[in-house]
Length: 241
Ligand SMILES: NC(=O)c1ccc[n+]([C@@H]2O[C@H](COP(=O)([O-])OP(=O)(O)OC[C@H]3O[C@@H](n4cnc5c(N)ncnc54)[C@H](O)[C@@H]3O)[C@@H](O)[C@H]2O)c1
Image (cartoon, rainbow, N blue to C red):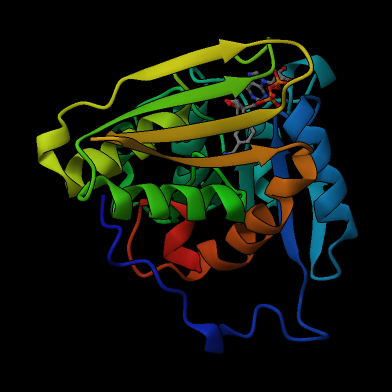
């Protein structure tokens, strides 16, 4: 990964009024996230929803690439990398929100004719939670993570929890691997607590996504920026903020 080489050239004018809309296809369009992303793209003045590939809608990713500038992927851990491979080979940039696979699998796409951006969490509050946890890690003796999600989530631990733990361990190697506890219950959307402990005190950093709308500003930002990344793949919304 090359997270340092991430910035777009703002002068590209992608958001300029009157400029050509970004043509966006959404893989997993029939899913919980996919439906919300389709609505957000539809409502964005600078984007056009040109494809809704999803097996339950009878449309394959290969059928929508000719009409897309960017493919957004909210599918399953077993399909996201293959979809990305197919898209970049066709010159279509990719924004991946799917979790449950190792982002290092995308390293093979470095130098491809199109860019790949992946974020385990597109909510700004979650990005801040990860950053605060990373900063706190060096100052406390121990830490554990509790992540809580709706009962139909396929992967465990969540991509957000895995990334938070990795960032904390990098910042504070003495913590070792951070234990992660996963809760799956109806009524939940996406929640995480990072609890740090030291003599006579604990510090809890908590983030709650109570609605999938929380992810949409980050997803739209990534769609606008992915084409002008100067390195690829890029992992983490913090590189676009
Ligand atoms: N990055 C984030 O901020 C964020 C936020 C929420 C969820 N997620 C992740 O997004 C993913 C999707 O979550 P969800 O709740 O919408 O799941 P979901 O099960 O509701 O939807 C997944 C959809 O993908 C479709 N699909 C399966 N294989 C496909 C393929 N090859 N091509 C196109 N579509 C295909 C399925 O038919 C289904 O409609 C999960 O990995 C989840 O963890 C990420």
